[in-house]
Length: 184
Ligand SMILES: CC(C)(COP(=O)(O)OP(=O)(O)OC[C@H]1O[C@@H](n2cnc3c(N)ncnc32)[C@H](O)[C@@H]1OP(=O)(O)O)[C@@H](O)C(=O)NCCC(=O)NCCS
Image (cartoon, rainbow, N blue to C red):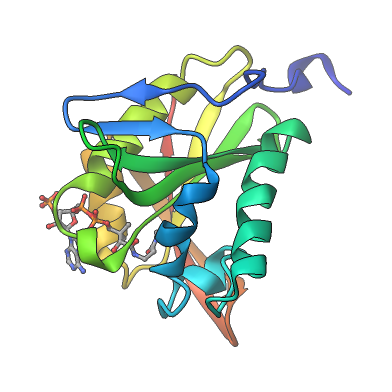
């Protein structure tokens, strides 16, 4: 490992992050009802490991995987909940990419979209992630058609750096991605 490749220091457990309206917190078993809301979303199961059926066992395994991500140093995934009621509305987190980079991902359940939750969750998550020791860069990849996603990213302070052509396969299709970042 080169001196410049000191890993980002992740916390031992997910923090609870609070903003005016939101709470980011660890998954609990009760959040199975949140995951159930997105198993038939056209995009979320394609870009995450959310199962495509309501099978309680698969949903429990999905939640267990989110816990294991931090334990294995892969990153952290938290539930986005309303601050006062703790009602779960989505997920936000990041994956460790090496070289001091973290790649951010997020989704909001369809019933709770267009209320500013993605933008607010992304700002809350990123403001905290930017304080982690060893963090050099927060990254975010968005397909150009996904205006709700890149507008949320821009509202949270991410800057578009360019278009990554034919960057990866989503479902059956090779897609371009906008590359966004926020720096400490
Ligand atoms: C993309 C997604 C996270 C947006 O969540 P959201 O909570 O509805 O977003 P917000 O309410 O914070 O909206 C942020 C901005 O995008 C706009 N927006 C939201 N959805 C939009 C849509 N479908 N089309 C156009 N603009 C949209 C909002 O008006 C707002 O604009 P503003 O900054 O001008 O006020 C949500 O649609 C989702 O989970 N989609 C499926 C998973 C996904 O795409 N994840 C991101 C992968 S990169």
